[in-house]
Image (cartoon, rainbow, N blue to C red; front, side):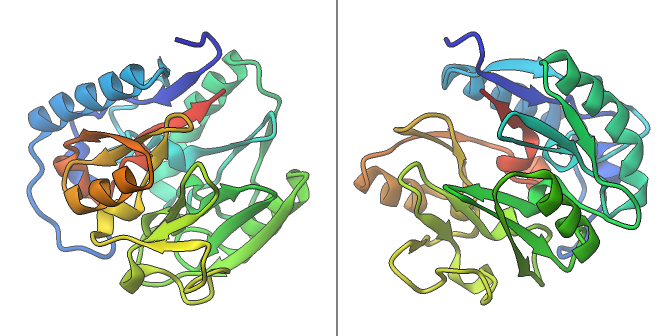
Length: 255
């Protein structure tokens, strides 16, 4: 395991079932099962070569397990987000403490900007930011000023975050479940875009050049990726999916 490859994660709290839902109907969440699934998720990250680094848990914040939304790590800089849901902002202090402990210089998104990390998709040379849900234009423009790369705003609707709809593979291609992909997303319908057969197949965590972390409920997408030469580690995150969570939002990879 590479010593510098850390995966920031945060344990689910006892109030997880009270987490926010926006585009799905609320369903009962089994908090005990969620804790088991979270542990298996962390084990999968470690199997893939990433050492878990825990951000301090916050019992009063039901959504705090979705640690991705608290920050953006890019080019050696940590940008502490400002979530669009005000109830999530108490999650930020411990997130900042964690990235400082890893040696990152820190910047912050400030009011009136809002930005969720799940709306930020980095590709080679370009960072796409989903705007219209939890992230606003002011937040996206602040991120553009902080990052030394091209930042492109993508209007989104009908999905919680941009990375609910699209992520990238190690070869640089974008994957997405076509009915959910923002029509304004650059490359949609072109060769750099690969459609997947299940919604959760669009949500990929790249562990290395050959290995992907996927939710357990997208076996046909896993077969598609296998045909492209990738190995898939599958994890059951069903309790988190009830809260619009996915494999990407449960961790932040730092290398």
